[in-house]
Figure (tube, rainbow, N blue to C red):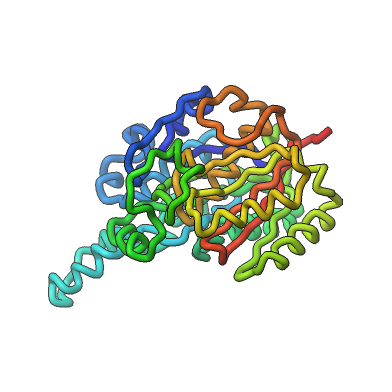
Length: 351
């Protein structure tokens, strides 16, 4: 599956070329909110004022891709929580109005597939339309769906593939109580070296045009693998099996993109993974840019695509061991030691 175009709305200025050209915003608090573009030229005002944040930033990232590419054949999204803030508002209205006549806006915007549906309506796309709601592996399942759809297509076919997650006050407080976020304030540029429990909260929308046509491709997704509730031996075996399935050995990987999030409880998984590769293996992190949220592996794919195209060599936000332009990248992310995924990405024409 080939990546033809991409866009991201994130806590960095990824909507324009500023982030790619070296801009790096450092936050002093534990909540990294997205920097939203001006929507006035993208979304009609009558629609914009009724949109929840997840739908709004998803459309802001996706609609420009749809407009500048050939007609796409479908839309595949991944999200863990969708428009959760609107969902909570809707449930509160049920109580406030004593189960009487409710305004429909919060309900319509609260469903996880609201973004995919709104994009289909705005772009008049009547093709394949699916939203995967699989928690921390929602985006990985969306990738798998898109790969299967394109593999089964007999003609040149393209899809909009993406993921979106918003910070909901309700869900943030639940995750904070559950120990998923740090109690002390920490800057995102110090996140990776943090040695305390929890991470910092982020959000974002990342979108791709994917196709079975290699012309003008930016990158190629070779394969992916996911596993739940593994022990360390399981993960090592899965990695070895994954490499063998793709005719690779550890030395064939040029760069690891790792999802370290500064949580001392779970970052040992990344130490384990790096131990499966040569000691001089190059690696970089990405959550210091966008924080932790359940579908941020989509941002890792955005990051990997830029790296494959020679970007970020002198970026001041890069943390890790990175010198050369890679041709083959392995993305590894895990959530609370339970949900793990590998995404293998290559240059369209690797050497």
